[in-house]
Length: 303
Image 1 (spheres, one colour):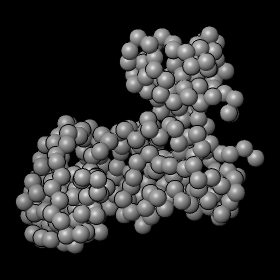
Image 2 (image 1 turned 135 degrees about the vertical axis):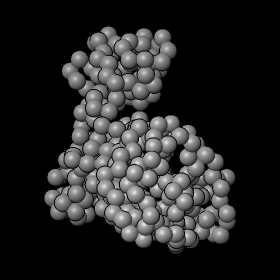
Image 3 (image 1 turned 120 degrees about the horizontal axis):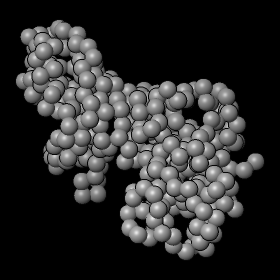
Image 4 (image 1 turned 60 degrees about the vertical axis):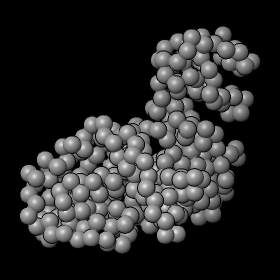
């Protein structure tokens, strides 16, 4: 049996790290060539995009996709991690907060904003993860970064001494939903943190097509030796969905096959999926200049 290759959309369960999911799929697919297109915190659930075999070459172009989340923010308590995993560092009654006040406080967080990432994060500071420095007792101050919150909807507000707010957001890559919870609480003067997070979308890949990990294990056989029962998206299907598309001529296919340049044609984008006349994903091209630059090649003879 040939080695499996393609893209797999998994619904990550709570309590699992993204690496835990990769390790499980490596066993199921019988290959170590598995990677993911963006970490989810252990507390979070939802869409985790995996590349298997040559599908790992596509992950570079998926990491920067915008993302969608459903979440619950708890107002009235702040934590060291900005989520429910961390120690509570302050509490303030939020009983006075109305939905109208919360909606008004949310408004400035829509659009292009400057955000300071959560200190307990995988961001590297002088070569070391920020969370490792925090756990070692260091006071970590991360630099603010520009992010975009294209949607920040308040779905429900449950009042009490602490107030739980159900939200849905669409955000650019690199946005911390935990930091949105923290900053909303700060804006309202009561503190806040995240108590639930579910990623509903990565680019064009949605929770509706994500596969339950335990069901995959049951259908594939734990410790499986191949891709039996693993519902992979082919390289071609994933490329057509995730990237702008260019259809190549036979002459252009031959040129690329010999390592020769071709003129840019079609979308002037940094990542364009280039297809042969028979629908094979041959390459990902950078078409921002008159001559297209090959970023990744998927040789036909390796299919």
